[in-house]
Image (cartoon, rainbow, N blue to C red; front, side, top):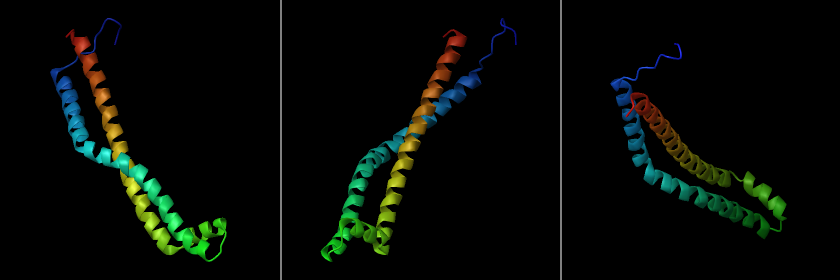
Length: 124
């Protein structure tokens, strides 16, 4: 392509961009409540994990173990590990929702830019 040639923008190209934008907007609308919950859950889960560890540490501290030893023993407790795993899975789910939200926002921004470039090319 020489410097004098222009890339042709077809109506179909603009329609595809607009369809992608609509898809992103639909996804963002669906994700909005999930993201709100996910942001709240992430903070809450971190506190829950600390409380869970303290709960299992207290058993060993009551038996006279040091804090370091109680921490190690609590983390080695299979019941603690199971409960902690559930919290980790909830945290992961929250992260997935937030990443999906960010992905759709980025995709929407890209579509907006492509649409603006197409309009500029067409002189609209």
